[in-house]
Length: 149
Image 1 (cartoon, rainbow, N blue to C red):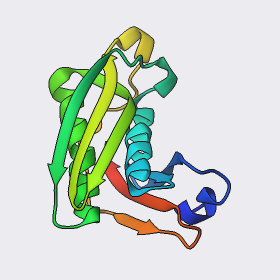
Image 2 (tube, one colour):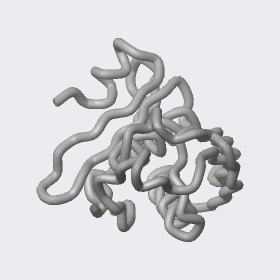
Image 3 (tube, rainbow, N blue to C red):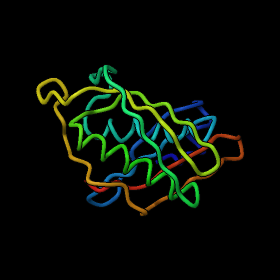
Image 4 (tube, one colour):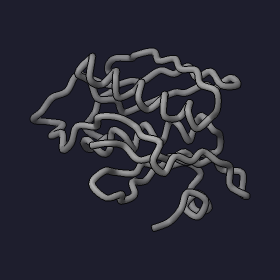
């Protein structure tokens, strides 16, 4: 398994899943902290279904605030999970802005279509397990944690 810094040497942005007992680890990486958070949210959707099958038809605004970047990351993912559950939506595109420890974002997606999306799991929440938000020597940001499925 590659870690976020090794993977970010070959791609400027992206995401990956990593194994963790009965749950699933998600990792986002990018040229900025916001980009890493965006990619981790894509990884969240990719744990449920094929992201390419989710149309960006509707947008939802999300805002979070936390005392540090790691807690902000968990709050961000849990806010996305909450919006998925309450609005019965999946998201395929995210735009995140981070100002200090305040995150504002827009998520684009559509209502769940069980036939087209074929959801594989339901994500219950982001956890503090394997929680890390850091900057690699090459300047890329990595944000990761385990999600409860």
